[in-house]
Amino acid sequence: MTERSRITIDLRAIRHNVARLRDVAAPAAVWAVVKADAYGHGAIDVGRAALTAGAGALCVATVGEGAALRAALGPDVRIVVLGPTLPADRSEARAARVELVTASQGEIPTDVPVHLKLDTGMGRWGLSELVEPGDNIVGLMTHFASSEADEGFTRRQLDAFLAAVAPYPGLERHAANSAAALAIAESRLDAVRCGIAVYGIDPFGVDGRAHGLDPALRWESAIARVVRLEPGESTGYGRRFVADLPTWVGQVPVGYADGFVRHLTGTKVIVAGEPCEVIGTISMDALAVRLPAKIEIGTSVTLVGDGVNLEHHARVAGTIAYELACGLRPGPARATRVVEE
Image (cartoon, rainbow, N blue to C red; front, side, top):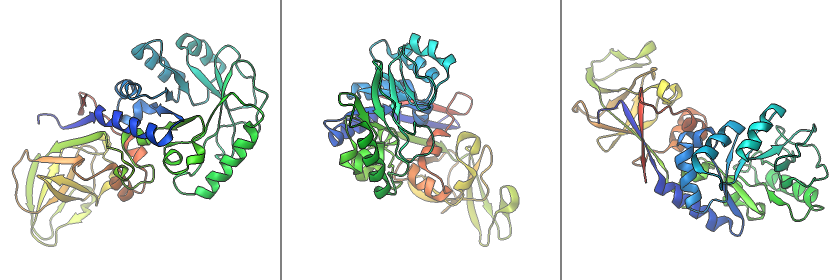
């Protein structure tokens, strides 16, 4: 490998995951959430793969994201903008032929398809009560606050939503995210909006394979320097790791500027097929691993893959896999992104 690091996106995994979610959610449609550049996986490639596997729509956060998908994927793709929009966005929304979500008590646009969003407990975007749907209202929706952790509260949200939409049969109802789609059958309704599960990442933070999902992202680098620390010698800023025994240390040219965040000290990566601990302070452009023995410069390092998943890293960092995936920064100056069909 000549790159500093390589991120590989397996579109076969994306197609498998969408097919798996379709099986789970049937007869509800599966809408693939590809906002934030498909959680760092590449929105155009992922969107195309998801549609090939039968996704009924692609969901994004902004009109700009929707317009980019429209330009790349053509006129027939259904695109739903989940985030809030301003009146200034509407001309672009009309031109891109996207569907919008209304989540405030202000004016509801009448010249684009709209989904009315009811706040049933998320406490973020959403109407406090549904308004009478006009002719251009195509869907009714809500958003679960803690479906990965609190089934009781999620069911209370669902009950409130179903009661509110009962007077309006015929409009699409959608509420479930990945966690609810996998775990709460009653929440699937007419469509499920699945994001993290599309990428093979477990919404419950353990391992997506437990739900029949395949991780789509692999991240690799290589050892750039090997040094033996003697007792009392250290590596990295702040002398966070000081050797108490003779210790072989490998330096990997990846750091928090690439998305391998500082809180990942103590996690495991795979070096030449073996789990190795990340030690010391993670720098902007480098991290250190404790090696079992002296190895060759250029030895492969798997940062994500080969049994080490983003969910594991997230637990070590005290965050969620969503944040780590969205924080990856592939590009010619830092990490190459490779797409496998």
